[in-house]
Image (cartoon, rainbow, N blue to C red; front, side, top):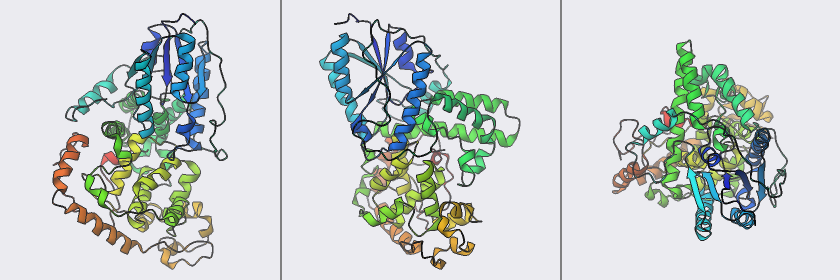
Length: 504
């Protein structure tokens, strides 16, 4: 057995960088470091994960591996359960200190970490976890959360540490094309992962692309270029939130025009909301599958497999909805407003369970971050009890954001020659290769609104809403907790509050 009582084992999760990495930085100050990433096949088979997530992760691992090689250091890759990998390394090295970043992941990673904690206790291993964003573990209440977030964001980012390798290394393996046992489809073009790509993306946004961000983020025609596109890099930790926050504030200081400053301020505010929503899942892990407001467990949303399949593949018969879904499926990204609309259509007009449609979207979003995704899915599905009900009218969305039909014609090519008037009023469409609308939008929205209103009028609704707000509500904006929402609008076309634009 190797005498390596000073070994510091740094287990990477969704923190694939060397800079501003508290766990790695502290481990490097303690002794020789072994950097580990475990490819967990069970994780990659989960219904909220897909090949596009793995390929972004793999890009990031390859880039990280190259950065470590510049220090003559190695990235240890293993496949299997983390428990088995830690047992292997324990047999080889004896006791070590385990380091990792705190993770606010899905239910599977939460339960995995409970198992790791039990393993560490049984083997007398010290597991040190460090925060890597604004999420606060074991938070008692939200009253001073903003102050904590500000202090973390304004602290000096940590430099890349100088790493010492242990005297001997376990056998190394290359990063596989796909995890063992996972039947992934062929690779599709997508946004590249890795810190090199992340820094380039950050630079182009803060110097060029973000100039019209504040106004261009709403339309799918302009948002693809004008939005930051940093969300998958924050998701996989190739950049830290603090790095982005400080770089954006530096750009704000240097900005020369009022419009440019407004766009940067708008973007910076979303970094706050990014962590705010992740804090919700940290505080209540069950919101991945349970309604935030308990009374919404009584809704009779049911899984209609045909409806889910048509919605998932952009075959609803509503051209703008289908164009957005097909663009998302092809690119792995679409702007927030269109994500909200897709969720609204699934939850209200098609009356599908948000848990199931949420998994479809999670697989499609290259930037799937559970702590943002599931609170947002619930918000757009009306199950939080502390947010207004917004039932998007997809026909109005199309008229407002794609008035000339350019986006529809691009992504629904079978309608390329259809008259413009029919693109925004699908009841007028008569095309042999395009389906009829799945439902009457007005009737479907009215029925959904009535069912949601019945829950809001329950005698205990306000009482339970106040409890939700106390645990999960933001303290940043003034507002009265537990106020009853009367805005069950059939045609709520916009979502103006800043907390809603988080996937940009």
